[in-house]
Amino acid sequence: MPARRSSDSEAAVEHPPSEIPLSRPRSPSRACGWSPTSWKSKPDAQAVRYDDPAAVERVVARIKELPPLVSSWEVERLRSLIADAQLGRRFLLQGGDCAETMHECRADTIANKLEILLKMSLVLIVSGRKPVVRVGRFAGQYAKPRSRPTEIRGGVELPSYFGDLVNGPAFTPEARRPDPERMLSCYQHAAMTLNFVRSLSAGGLSDLQRPECWDLSFSERADLPAPMHESFRATTRQLGDALRCMDALGGAGNELSRVEFFTSHEGLNLHYESAQTRVAPHRSEYYDLTTHMPWLGERTRALDGAHVEFLRGISNPIGIKLGPTVSAVDVLRLLDTLNPGEIPGRIVLITRMGADRVEDTLPPLLEIVKRAGRRVLWVCDPMHGNTITTASGVKTREFSAIVREIERTYDAHDACGTYLGGVHFELTGDDVTECIGGSVREEDLTRAYETLCDPRLNQAQALELSYCIARRMRAMSP
Image (tube, rainbow, N blue to C red; front, top):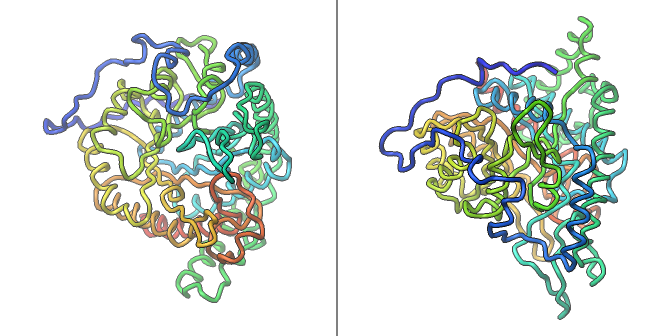
C-alpha cells in the first residue's frame, strides 16, 4: 500500500477573515467524552424501534467479534486520495444503489455496477486529465432514512421500510417488524459483496479497452444536438487512442485490471456502525470499519444529534449531504465539530440543491467556506434535489434536470473561484427504467421499475452523463 504523501496533507490554507462568525478550533474535540457508544446519549430522529433490546445487544456483540469489513489502511488510503482531490489533483466519482438489497447480492449485479463506474471513470480521466477516485454506494447501503416512521395503505398503518438492514419491503406486519438479526445478515452480504468486488478489481475488469465497442447508442439519438454528438464521438476516439497507446507500451492491461474501488454508505443505523468501530492495530485512532467513507444525510446532520456525535470520533473520511435549506453557519459548525484539526481528506461536502435552486443556494455556501479557509472536497449530487412524481404517482427524475444541476453547480464554482471535485449518483449497471430521459419516456417507467426507494440512472443514462461531464471538464482543462 503506497504511503501517504505528507507534503500534500500539510499544504497551507488561508486563515478565515475576521468577519466570519465562527472561529476554527485549534484542537480536536472528539477526544472529549467520546466513545463508540456515546451517541446513545444524543437524540436520534432516525432511531429504529426494536421490540427486544436484549436481542439487539446480542447481535451487536456478535458483530463486534467478527472481522472488519474494511481495513484502517484502506481508509487511510482513501483519505489521502481525497486530500489530493481537495487540491484539485483528482476527481471523485461516487455511485451505486439508492438502497441495496440482500436479494441483489448477485455476481452479475455487482459486476455491472463496477463496470459502469469504471467506464464512467475512464471517460472522466481522458477529459479531465487527472486520476479518478472510484467510490461505490455498495457493500453496506442497506439502510434508508424516512421522513415518517410509519406508512398507511388502505387504512392499514405499518412501520416504514427502513432498508434491508432493519426490515423488509413487503407491506405486512411480519416483514415491516424491525428485526435485529438483519444486521448480521447484511454484514454477511456486505462481506460477500466486498469479496467479489476485490476479486474483480484485482483481475476481472480488463476487457474494457475498446470504447468504440461499448453501448453508445445514446450518442446516435436524433434529438441530440450535432455539437454534442461530435463531442461524444471525439471523446470516444480520444479514449480509444489513449488505451491503445497504453496497451502498446505494455501498461493498459495492468492499469485496468488493478483498479481501486472504495465503499461508502450513509451511517444511519448506529448499532451496526458502532459494532464495527475499533482502534486499529498500531494506531490510537478509532475507525468505523463497516465502510471506507460513511456519510451524513439531510435528516441526520443535526449538530446535537446522535449521528454527528458518532462521526466526530472516527477517523474515516466523512461525507455531508447539504440540501437547499442548510445555512452557511450550520455548515461551519459542522466543520468545526467534525474536523476541528483541519485534517486533509477528512470532509466531503455533497451538495444536493435541485436544478432550480442551485443559483440561489449554493454560492453563499461556497463563499463562506472559502473565506473561512476550510479545506473540503465539493461534490455535486444532482439526483436527490430533482425527484418528481408523475401524474400516475410514479416517483422519477428527469435526466435533463440532473444535467442542469451539474452545469449550474460548475457555474457557481467558477464564479466563486472554488473547485467542483466530484459527483455523486444513484445508478445501476442494469437496464432499468426509473429516470426519464434518453430512451426512457414516462410511459416506459413501468417496464423495468425495480428500485425499492429512489429512481436510479441505468447504464446508458449513467454513461451519457459521464460524457456530458467530460465536455465540461475538457473545456476547463489547460
